[in-house]
Each structure stands twice: as structure tokens, then as C-alpha cells.
Image 1 (tube, rainbow, N blue to C red):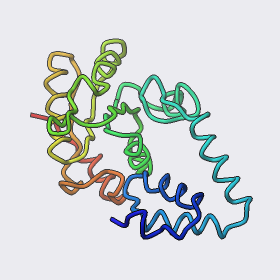
Image 2 (tube, rainbow, N blue to C red):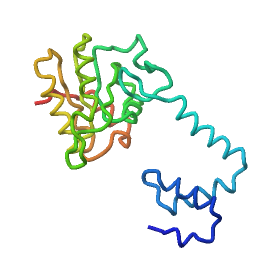
Image 3 (tube, one colour):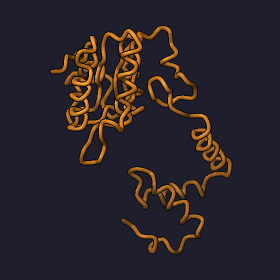
Image 4 (cartoon, helix red, strand yellow):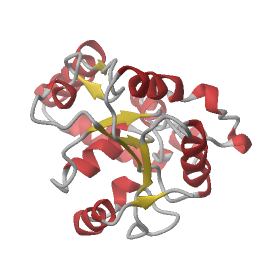
Length: 206
């Protein structure tokens, strides 16, 4: 990784911006430097718009307390939509997965975002996810099916099996997203057609 010493000829303000940008996931110092220089070359209005957009995200966006996706309203537009079938809940790991599934125009139910997947190696246990909230939604509503659409990774499979066992005896069908999604991939990176086939071909767990 490129060190600060190789950028010592830059003004301190630019170095500070590089440090902040390099703190984002998958952004190295070289990429951060390119972004910082692009901002520096751009009109002042661009920097002001970027700053305003960053503050707007922090001020206006929060979690929906029903499904736990990100939204500017609570409940979110999906949970508040009377045309959605609330007896079908699709469980995903992150808010980005909701976006990916919505692009298929296949799922007409609602969602539940866990906030991750069970991963003992990373120190993520079931009680750190929104599994209690999921169980509460099933107890309090007429839910007929829970579609587990966690990523097809070791962690996603572990989470799916945990949910299936957790909901045993709950009088609700627990299904798993079909194997149309490549193993080891993230839902956000899968093409719309593959996701659509995976939703259509869901099957029972166990």
C-alpha cells in the first residue's frame, strides 16, 4: 500500500482528504488520491453538492423499523405499500440485497434485512442479527412464507439453516432462494435474469 511519505509533496488539506477517502471499503490510497485530485480540479459547486449529499444521507436516511432496510420514511415505501403481500417475507443480509431483488420485478411480498450473516470466524453470532425481530413479525402477523435469500456463501447457508430451525413449529413455510445464484457470489453482483430465475425456483429448506 502506498504510504503517506510518497505523497509528502501534496498540501496537507489534500492529504487529509486522501486519508478520509481511503477509509472507504475497497478504496486504496492511489484511488483515493485520484478522487481527491478530481475534486480539486472540479468547480467549487461540485464539492458543495458532494458535501450536501453526504450530510443529507446522514440527516434523512435511517432504518425502517419494520423491515430494517434504509429509507427516508418509517415505515419504508415497500412496507407501507398496500399492494405488497405482507404474508410473504423475503429475508436478506443487507439493504443492497433489497435493491437487487426489487430490480427483478418478481417478488411482490415484503422484506426483512438481517444486517449480516452468522459468521463465528468474524465474531458475528445470531444474537447480533435481527432474528428476534423476524420472529416477532411472524408471531404478530399472518405470515405464510419466509423466503431466505441470504447469499449462497458458507455464512449465508449457515444463516439459512439457523432460520429454518428457528421457525420450526411456527406454522410458516420456510423456503430458500434457488441455486440459480452462483455459489460464493453476492446478490448485488448477480444479473437480473439470474435473480429472477432464483426467485421463481425457490425450494423448501431441509
